[in-house]
Image (cartoon, rainbow, N blue to C red; front, side):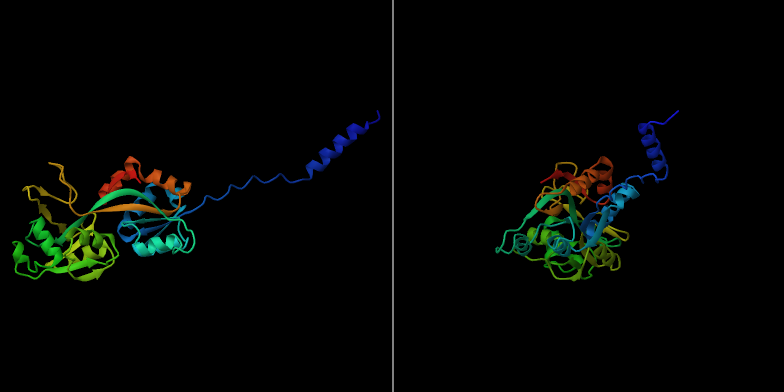
Length: 286
């Protein structure tokens, strides 16, 4: 029986198809990496957050732990998507973000994520447990120079302080008003301050979050007579007077990549981790 032309065409197509390799499956596009510059003091918390997200999610978040000023510099240079820091930009940083008044630039956008108290840190063997608000100001401002003036030993107060461009220094400076913070040995981050205080019984330091080993926080006696501690102001609703914010900073509108990470770090589990590290998540609120 003669073959029809149409049948010959079908057979030819089948033979040709048998010689071809199957098309490879489509390769999924790589997930973009979120680049963050974060303050030294919050670096440990960010590390815990990313570990809790799982290896796959954490692998798409690159974190550079650095000083607040360097975090702003990285954001201005376009090296990171966002900065997680404890202060807003300085006037000089803000001018640079806006193009130094010469060209239009994207200004900073802030998202307040949390609050953390600035604690007055002392050595665990220091007999002083509580100071009044006025005594705290005297210790920080330098007009009280001996622990004996607040009920302790006759040892001279040895201070460990932060750099002037850090949020901790700025909070103390604003709280003291016209009086300036007393000089002391300058250290780069809260962990370094806590380590220094733990090694010297007559020392005083300021730091955010929970104190480390060998260090504890002083309590404050308010003018009302109420005693409050940095991480607990239950009772009359009193507020710890030295507070600093944790803010997420971007240039211009936030990107979906950043917002997706924020959604993950504001879950109930992430909030619990923040509180364990001395932060109380605030919303977030702009």
